[in-house]
Length: 406
Figure 1 (spheres, rainbow, N blue to C red):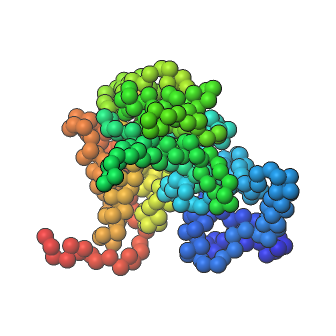
Figure 2: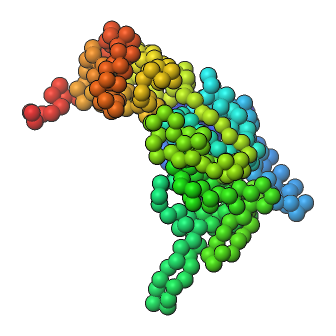
Figure 3: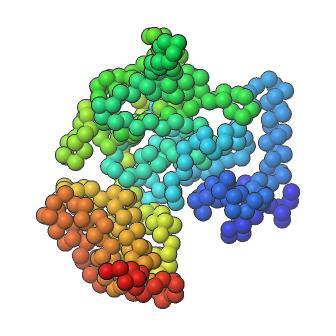
């Protein structure tokens, strides 16, 4: 295939040897979703496929395991191989409108964590809610076709079933191996039959009790990772298996009274994570691109509202960071605010001047007490006082969406 006949994106007309990266970064669309929209559309050039086949044949002749592929995805400034031997359903889903941050502290946090994860290290990531901790592991798994399993720690629950459980039937009792045991011991079997390691994501790790956290001690052993199975039998962890855990705290328990279910984690277990990173809130320059993609109708009708929300968001988070406001305002809070605004416009077909102020109720009413809510309103008020002017457009919505149901 010549340069003039490269695969063309059916959404915007972009041409490239491989459209997977473009679709994910620009349109937040996976290949399977894209092919569902445009069946039979080419996504890889003949030249790229030929290069991959040539390289694979050379490796087969050398009796070495086949390489993943020469097709690559650019993650920030890294070019990383994609594994076409793993189907999307074996990976974690890509978060809606996900973008790798390019500005501020979180861009630095993400870059360093990326280097460690892509280098195969066991990583502990902590930070406030909504800073993209879990989303990073999801993006790596989905974009690079890394087979992955996610487990969430629930305080006080028995997680032994992750590894094995006892079952009962007419023939008596027997042991049943759990999903995590099999993943840690056996790895993932690709479509070609070769085995590769899993990425294991464990969320809310600081909610773990002492006994729950102990399950990671053997697995993370720096000499030889092991996992215990039924009857006390111990197996070696499949080489290259990677553990990424996320938490709201650094392992020392709750220090501000807002993450009260967080526990203290044994220092000798924390020490087994080869890398530890703290994630900070996303800069508005990055966050606004995400929310514009999540709420396109709202952005089309009243784009200036996003600037007002952005300035108010910065004021709220600055006060929270200085412990002047006893609350949280994560990306979920921003989405609740903008989402309610979009609901109002969608239901009424118009843009009220006080739209931003009305939308703020979606998160303000969730503040812990009246005093905190009043403080948050005062922080937001200077940035949203002017109101918004909507772009006129016929949405087809009824002027009375309740249709007389009063």
